[in-house]
Image (cartoon, rainbow, N blue to C red; front, top):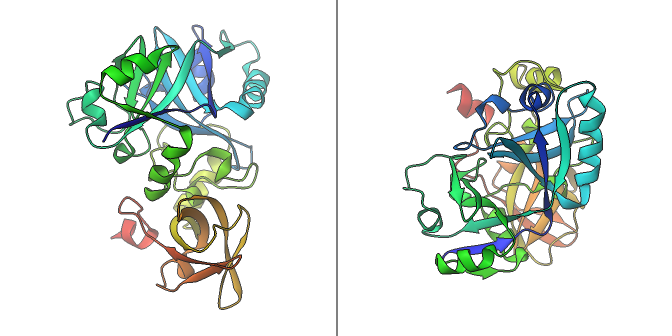
Length: 299
């Protein structure tokens, strides 16, 4: 079955003006030059020290860049972008005429008009808005930025409309983080959070805020922890709960639902094949096929 859910936890910013692209290019972790009406990307805004502040999707519609971000933190992101705008000929505004949808399940891409051969990030017009294959991982399905009343178009296209919470088990099963639910503000590092494998950072684009630490982390092999999906036996530990192995602290719990979750784990502990413990629950780390660890990358 193909599912769709409106993500009320997400909201949009519109970035317009003749210098919108160069303005964003000097700030975010991915290459804004790749964004067009047929391509969306995933990226992040970092502190000067290379720590996570915001992650988002960037798409284009009618010449305007649309930034899909966390609804509860949209004002903070807008404020931070405005600080950097200075004299750039760009405008930053809330875009409340469109809503964010997640679409998943067998046949979801075909129902949106994709041929099936498209890669992550491929975009096309749909129902007065834009739909794109999830730029992080094509197996997740698609996202769409659509005007009010899109439920009718989606239902007529064969999607079963679901509550937002029904998307979480699908996301967690694929091991993909969801903003500040899984990444700690001003603490998380992109490469520990699998941004390279999830197409959220471009190492060839040139300078951006936090680029130096991100590059150093990659080329010096400094990543000792990663976000891993975990299967949970027992009640899901609260986010932030300590995870232990034989009594030793080896990680921290992130979001969870339906017997699955995400956890930031030391690589040696995650790959040892042992059962971990957290707040009375037992956790089994799972390595997704898409996750490339240092030894594999070198091979």
